[in-house]
Image (cartoon, rainbow, N blue to C red; front, top):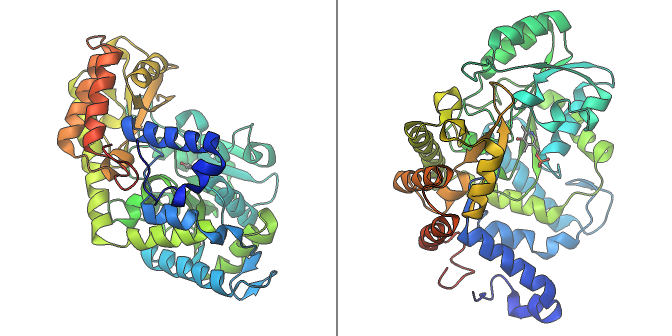
Length: 418
Ligand SMILES: *Cc1c(COP(=O)(O)O)cnc(C)c1O
């Protein structure tokens, strides 16, 4: 694999640090020749990568545009204002903060705005698809707040709305969190708003996963309903790794202070510039078409897995992600993940609503960016099924994955001949 000047300008990295350059190329090769089915992953555009690798990475910029603690911020201020304006326009929000270093940092800042240590928070329980920041004992959230968890129904995997309402009435939480790492269906934000209003709670939407679909019009927006919306800029949104927060004007100043100086120091201006690039891309018709294809691809995958005998949690999907139980094929999720990894198909295991066995969680954001459509989803589902049934050897499947990915290179600009 040869590298164009775009990825390694004038061969600087290869000459100075061949050891690291080798690692970089190895990862490019891995991403280009295996199938990225991890629901949280995607391929950013070369333009986003260019902003990330720019000299904006050198700039210290504590504070906000026009009110920095460092000199020389006049140019990066323009970049951050652009990112904020684009985010507000894209999501129809009154206020946007684009400084959060990650999705988790955005959630931490949201809690800092609305909660005090010891407050009760109602969120989707971790075994049912809640994120670490929704009350894991290993995370600050579980240590500092009193989380109570609602769940999904064991038979269908759908959020148990009656339980949400009952628990809200019993526990009178200070805030309700909606959002998940593994929920394949749209979230009923209006319902959560209604329950929050009934018990006098704030509503926090942690929309890290679906926010890209929201940008493209392929999923309902939490913005009109939640007091604070937290999201990542990676995942379906296809920007750099990072977080953002959206809210109404009345919480704007408190949100900004909760990010800096309460939970973070200097803003990462290269990342903020890359977020601006991604928001610009997400505002195009091409991105809207992309998000529709992402969902169509996930639906086709889910249908094909169902037809092959796997149990599809909730019976399908509205989004980019699906959860399946491969048990009917004679393997559990953990074993399946290993078998598929050996064949070049990379995905996660996750909890299942019924019982203790683990299932598989897949997403179509990355393969759709590569240009794959329904036909390729059928092909991938057949390959997965054949591997799990033991009908195809890992080596044979690996070669088929290589052939497929060779026809859909994620970064044709960086690679010659895939
Ligand atoms: C991905 C995700 C996060 C965290 O994002 P990081 O950037 O990994 O910190 C938080 N909440 C939800 C629901 C997520 O899916």
